[in-house]
Length: 320
Image (cartoon, rainbow, N blue to C red; front, top):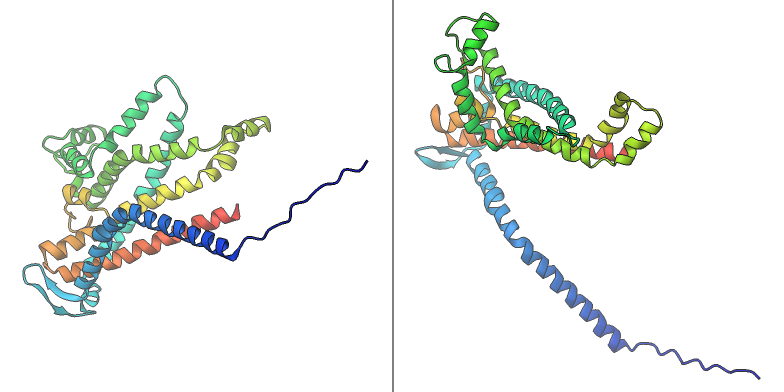
């Protein structure tokens, strides 16, 4: 006995129902987009007020004759930019800023990496070491500079007395009184202040590396040096690139430490680009237009440098 089956006819959806469903989807998408813009609007407003608007004002000032006391007196583009290159201090400040940036980055990065390796594993004294290394990061750079200014003082600071006994320096001589001494004294301050911060960033990168990778390397017989060269450093490249971007950008914008410790001296030997901007605006020339022109050039240089670094990081990631 055969069993017959009955198949229900397939009914195509009506055009009216399809149109109504499409309208509902579009309405839901529009509501979702509006909700997203609503949540993003406070951040966008802050970005416009705190970044876009000041940049526009600085560009307008750079293209105008704008004095500190007299205010805006009309446009003069490109006079402010041509005046910059006739300033003998511009080349000197650029050279010193680049030298300081290279020294700080090349010294700070290995120290931060070494400290991160030192306190990475959970051991008895590591909690104390992490706290002790991170404490200087809680200080503002201005406060740390004032602290080191007292330490370097020939009258009340202990460092000069130590150098007299150990290195045989002249009694009462100021560390900040020579170009080399002022530079290295500032580098020591910056490394002390930021080593803990970069150590923390490096630790995050190290902890993101899977432990299985190290276990496989040990099984294959790889030693510590081979593991460091073939596993740790390649997988840590994004973190290293980020810390280098932060270090280079911060060093190129250095101001507080040199203004407090040396004020650009002796004989303008520690004059940074930002210090020159400050001098042109508020001390020597009192020309806000000239200072704004230099600020625009510095901003463009920072954008180009960061783009090169990010491009190199992207190419390295694509190769993997």
